[in-house]
Every structure is written in C-alpha cells, then in structure tokens.
Figure: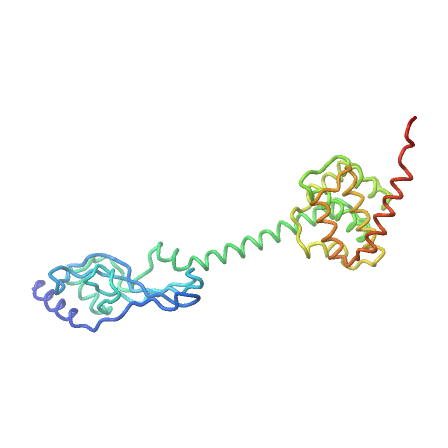
Length: 289
C-alpha cells in the first residue's frame, strides 16, 4: 500500500510546474531567492534517484549585507537544492509524504529558518542593532562621566564649571597628564572660585574627562556664555597647554577646534597669546650673573 502511494505521489510531483529561484538586484539593493537543503527524501525522481527537500527563502540586502530573510515554502529538487529551480510542495502534499514515510516525521509542516540562515539573512539588522546599542551605551557612559565631573566641582557657578571642565579635557589631549598641568588647573580653579581646589580633586576631575574629542564636541565649553566668558575658557585652556613647557601637536589641535566651536577668531586668540606671554615674561626670574 505504501509503495503504491509513493509512486503516485512521485508521479504527481514530477509533473508539477517548476518555479525559478533567482538572484535579483545584486548591485545596491534587492533580494535574493535561495534553496537550502533540508534532507534527502525517499520520494523517487525521474533521474533514478530521490528528491531533496529544500527550504525556499528570500533574503533582502543592501550592499550585499542581508537585512531580512523570510522562508517562503518547501520545495523538492532533483539537483540536491543546488539548481535554480524546484518543484513546488504544498503543506497538504508535505503531510501526505510524512504519513507515507517519505520524509522525516519530526520536520515542521511550515518550514523554519535555521540559525545559520537567520545570522546571514539578518546580519545587517544585527550589525545595525549593535551599532545603535554601542552609541546608546557610549552616550550613557559619557553622560555619567560628565555628571561625576560636575558633582566633583561642587556648587560653583556654571561658567566656572565650563572653564575647569575645558582645562581638564585639555590636560588629556596629548594622552599624558603631567603633574604641572594638574597643579596649573588647581591654581586657576582656586583663583576663579576662591575655594580650595587641591591637586587630588583636580586629578579626579581630569581622570573623568573624555579623550579624542572631535569638531562639535567643544561647543559645550561655551554654551550660554558671553564673549568675555568664552575668552576666559580659551585663555585658561591655553595656559594649561603650555604649562608643561611643551605645546604639543595634539594640544594645538585641541585649541584650534575649541576656537572654532566657541567662534573665537584668530585676532582674539593672538591677543590671548600675547597677554599670556607678557605675564610669563613679567613673572620670569632675573637671570643670574
């Protein structure tokens, strides 16, 4: 009885119309239809072998990276699921073949994607999700560090907080925080606040500062400040940059981006440099004879 059923089912399948599994739009955006091997069935094919059971899926991609894949249906292939055509296989025919023992009984009637097919089909979506997660996490960490810096400064005026925060970031600009830079920040902070800002407190604030700032990140150091207040920010930062006797390339880059974001022109910067140099000259010790 089962042998007769197998023959009739095989005959029916061999004469079903075939469907094409084509690759479309492979250059920029599009979709790609694929056949994925599930198992070798016991359904006879007309080439003397048996049909392979395949999953017929469609993957949507952007720049060849899959963003979504869905499974369409089962299909039968006499080429081991390696050709661009297959024989359609309905749910009713699938269940009939299972009942006849021609395919494994534990296979689901509705095909499901394998783990590998999910990973390749949703690689772009997974990557995008990880990028978003990384950006969100980075924003949270950045916000927490900024809050910790402000809390360490205490209840001083907001413009003064910006000056100290900018100096702390300058101290980390060249990748090395020198003790002379910490001492210089502490002195300027004491002059601005008339509070006790010791070196250990300044070191804590500096350690919480961010590295690798880019154009646009410096706007925060002048947000809501007057031109004179922004001038104080830039002058204080310049003093820290030269406090160790070496105005390094990274520090020069920091000052340049700070100027752009605070909208301070070169003429005003030249005036600040001249003012600082005059102060250094006036306080320099007399040469010994």
